[in-house]
Image (tube, rainbow, N blue to C red; front, side, top):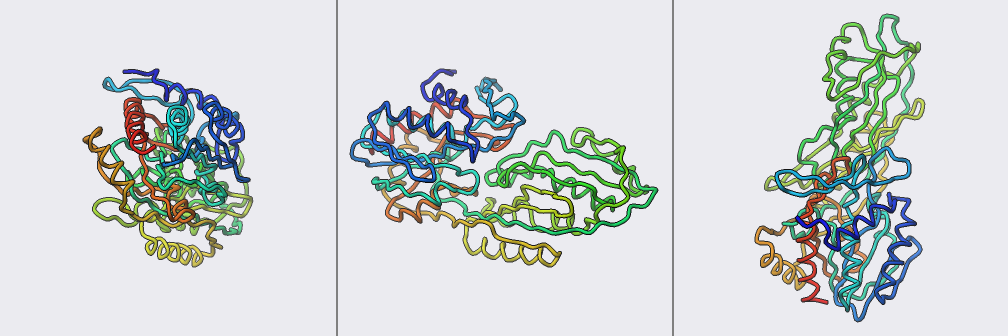
Length: 437
């Protein structure tokens, strides 16, 4: 297996530059510096999007330059590591997410600017925290076609995607006295795998917050502390629960599976805690995972991504997705009503529409090339958010399609890049650009 082809070398350089969402300034400057080597015109808007133009643009490549960083390193460092499974080469990070989503796109886009003329490349910022760059874009691509390079399966040619929304719900819980015979425990989740809340929501990956909520409900415990989750758009891995448990349920606590939970007895024994029956109910009943499918594919889902506790206030953050706008609107109303009936103040923080399928010259050309050079390819609508949906609203005259190499478990510590698919993607992308640029 070749592990030194040019896009991979560029991607490994990208891994050396910290670029978590909200903190991408160093990456932005690096992209502009590299692009300037290839005789392009560089434009930047106030939000931080970058448009690079070369010749008379006939097609635009698009990707985002932030990543979901999951890991313990305060400097957001990435340590790439090659490994093999059944003679197949992969790349992952040693103790963090890898950032192949969307670093592989950045590598291919920069090299496309190096080797092709009549091309634009649009690098957008802060996609992973609500499509911020796309929503606030003030740049004007001239190309009639845009190829988003954020798909995560080499066999997929994506022609539509889900829209999404963020819901925030907060409630103040009153303290209640704790009986003297209650036992005090701290429970931390461990070895949860997490994953992308869109493309992996159908895999029934355990949600760390929900698993702890089940413990609260089953043991009728009084809550001292309850918080966890990493990002609104990733399935929670880490969560912490501190409780006072009635004697009749301590056996259940002590027999929790050690591979999933770290359990210890608390030294402190406060006199008061929170009656969080409604909190547990909100987590377990508001809707999490796939809510509606069509032809065995999710078209409506919800992910409980984060739970915060600030003294008496508990706040949960949901991210919903839908491939049909009417389904999303209906579910927003349903979830808000449910949470408000439990005494939460529920607010819609963000919303973006799905990208509907469009037939046209771009899809025809890309699909023909994929059929020729990747016989396993197929057309697909995905249950994840792509910037195509928002950019289509900004640029209604532009036609879109989304492609990319195979990336497994993005937004998690288990994120890994299929090296062969990355190389294959670059070969196919060059075929497309030779036809169109």
